[in-house]
Image 1 (tube, helix red, strand yellow):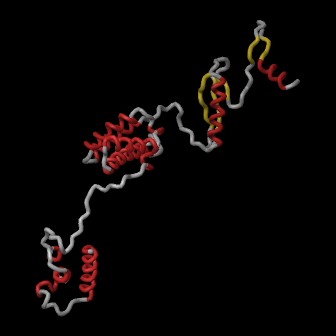
Image 2 (cartoon, rainbow, N blue to C red; image 1 turned 135 degrees about the horizontal axis):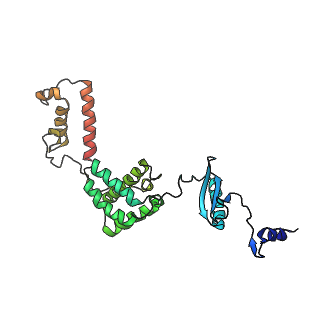
Image 3 (cartoon, rainbow, N blue to C red; image 1 turned 90 degrees about the horizontal axis):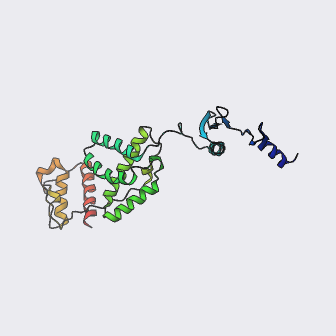
Length: 259
């Protein structure tokens, strides 16, 4: 018998009432738990060799699911413990983060304010489906639209990272996508250097205004050699090697800032 003939013989058979009916051809890994109930299950071994069973429905869907699971096992993909478990939403993780912030952080009011925008964007999304690219894109768009400073973007990133980190600690998710989001460089301050031409509001002699570098170095020398400070500049005849070394280091630092 040829192949087509064998398939025809397996697919149909003569019923008692003369009705042509499909045969119940057995497929590996697919079975009816209750014969005749038309509810099909799949049975397979995961990557650890443990036998797993899943209820599907019709036979065609069960065959497709069995093939999918076997492919996942061959690719080394880790299967969830419970396929029927409801995915954890970002909103649930956000509430956990706000509870933690209120209990442990003085800035919990700011976290509550920032979390409103985050929940509006990601609240209904499954937390494990959010990618670093989505977070990066959202932060960039909000930064441009609202003219955020780099420090503001970093505060939102920190809150996102806290939210996902607590989800991992509570075993609700397994990865933290915010960890891969790049931190912005903060340049919100101004750097000032003191020199001999600008007066400093301080009681330290060598940081006060001086007419020239020599007078400033004299003040510095007396300040460094504290045990000789009462003798003044003209009365210093001998100093220890350690005091001289401290003075030279301080003099080099001053000359570096004055250039």
